[in-house]
Image (tube, rainbow, N blue to C red; front, side, top):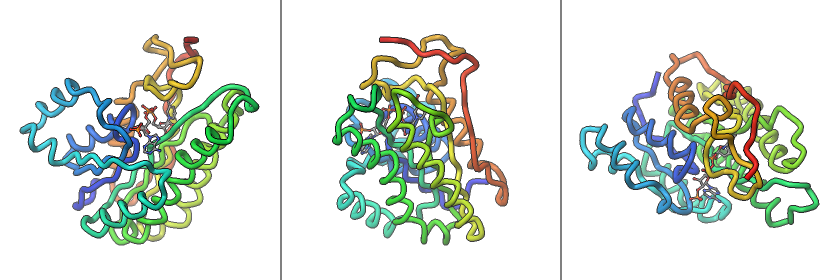
Amino acid sequence: MITDIKKAIVTGASSGIGKAISESLVEKGWTVYGIGRDFSKCCEADQRQKACELQSTEEAENRMIEIVCDITDTQKLTKTIKELNKAHDISLLINNAGVGYYGLHEELNPKKIASMVRTNFEAPMVLTNLLLRDLKKNHGTIINVSSITAEKTNPHGCAYGATKAGLTSFSHSLFEEARKYGVRVINIEPDMTATSLYRNADFTADDEENARILPQEVADAVIFAIEQRNGLVMTDITIRPQLHRIKKK
Ligand SMILES: NC(=O)c1ccc[n+]([C@@H]2O[C@H](COP(=O)([O-])OP(=O)(O)OC[C@H]3O[C@@H](n4cnc5c(N)ncnc54)[C@H](OP(=O)(O)O)[C@@H]3O)[C@@H](O)[C@H]2O)c1
C-alpha cells in the first residue's frame, strides 16, 4: 500500500525513466520533489497532455516540484535534502539519476569515470544516508534504479557496469539492514530502455518494440512495487525486452 504521507524525492526527474516515474507518482496522488540539472529539455507538450489528465494543470504543477541540483555537488545536495526533509515528511526516495560513458576502458578519462561513480553510486548512498533516519520513522521506501548490467560482464561498459553492480550490492545490504525498521528497499534493473542515456555512446536502444523497454514501463513497475501491501517487499525487479539487440548509431 502507499503510505498516508505521499511525498517523494526522485533524482533524474528531468528526463527518461525518472520523468516517467515522477509523472506516474503525481498521477497517483504523490507530491514529487524531482531533482535534475536541467528541466528545460522536458517536452512541454507532453507535460501539458499529462497535466490535462489530472483535475487541473495547476494541481499537477503543484505536485511536481522541480529542484535544480547537481547531485555530484555534495554540499549543495546535502543542504537541499536537509531543507526538504525538515519541511516535509518524505516517505519515498527514488535514486534514478545516472550517466553512462561507454567504449574501451582506456578510452575513458578520470573525469568520465568520476562522473559515473559519483552520480550512479556515491549520490544514492549519500541521499540514503541523509534520509534514512526519517524513512525509518515513516516506514518509507527506497528505490534504486540500477541496471541489468549489474548482473553481467560489460565489455565496453566496464566502469558503468561496476557502478551499477555497486548500487545493486548497496540495495541488497541496505534491505537486510533496514528491513526490521519497516523500510522497503527495491532494486530495479532495467535492460535497454528508450531514453537519452546513450547520448555519449555509438549505440542506442533498438527501435523495434520487442527489443527495447519504454520509460513508462519502468514507471509502471515502480508503481506496482510501491502499491504492494505493507509487509511485502519486491526487493528485485528485472525488466527485459524479449529480444537482445542494440542499434548502432
Ligand atoms: N536507458 C537505459 O537503457 C537504462 C537501462 C538500465 C538502467 N538505466 C538507468 O536508468 C536511470 C535513468 O536513466 P535514463 O535512461 O532515463 O537516462 P536519461 O534520460 O539520460 O536520464 C538521466 C537523468 O539523470 C539526471 N542526471 C544525470 N546526472 C545528474 C547529476 N549530476 N545531477 C542531477 N541529475 C543528474 C539527468 O538530469 P539532468 O541532465 O537534467 O541533470 C536525467 O534526468 C539511470 O540511472 C540509468 O543508468 C537506464
